[in-house]
Amino acid sequence: MKFEKVAIIAGTRPEVIKCYPVLAELRNRNINTLFISTGQQKELLAETLDSLQISPDIDLNLMTENQTPAAFLTRTISELSSIFSKEEPDLILVQGDTLSAFAGAQAAYLNSIKLGHIEAGLRSHSLDSPWPEEGIRRAIDSISNFLWVPTEADVLVCEPDQECLVTGNTVVDALRLIRSNSPTVVTERKKIIVTMHRRESFGKTMTKALEALVEYSKKCEHEILFIQHPNPNVQKSVIEAKIKESRIEISQPIPYVSFIKLLQSCNLLITDSGGLQEEATILGIPTLILRESTERAAAITEGRSLLSSPDGKLLEAHANYLINVDKSSQGMNLVFGDGFAAKKIIDSIFGARND
Image (tube, rainbow, N blue to C red; front, side, top):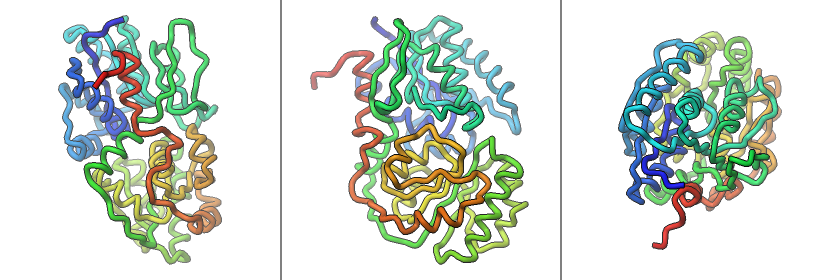
């Protein structure tokens, strides 16, 4: 099957980071490519695009304050369908498990356009965690023609009209490109980085976790940097937990390239993020995961990460354990791939290049 025009849909910081190598590979081969942003994460998206020096061909800018997932999904499917009708792509690529990816997948399917899913196959085996991402990823996989999975553990039982290929995770490509373009001199610092933004933890769970972090900061000799997500629900928990009255430093989101440099020099990452589990594992950073379950099993089996209670009940004990784990910052851990996933993905569509 020959494809003449490929559209990539993204709307969040993680999607842009992981689509960036695929977009670069397509453009390096002079393949007619349309990069569409839904604008799901306005501020985070803008700084990430700027940091990676890329820009969308079409920016829908659809997110509004406190918009419900259902409202965003409905608007995005409608807008994308209109664009597909006008631009006539014959292959749509989506990444991961976001609402933007779900909308792109649904719009492709409803308009009878072939669909490729980057980072297919990951499963936590719990529809409640991460929510709604677990259900979204399963749904996208079910209607995709091409399923590009990161590891052998993510391989799916496909239908006869689907193709499944192990490619590695494109985040490894992104980190390889960043490290080659901007070498980092890693300096050892007594620093802990913390991020929280999971929807299923909004409210009491997140507030309790932050309160546990405040108590830990009273005993811990390390600097603690909390990178605050712009979601109002996170801001509410920050106020309730009185983070600003503690010795914890609060930072607004950091541009991606600068964040990776910071991550490489820390002693411990505490997070509920899915993507950061990958980046920390690749860079050898011990990670405390504030979630009931994870779809990134390789992060746990590498022995540098621990699943911990989302409400911070075990935060102190687990942090003290991980902070003494040796941190390896030499080279890159290849458990999520060799850094050439984008090439494998595009080769599977258009054939391997001879140059």
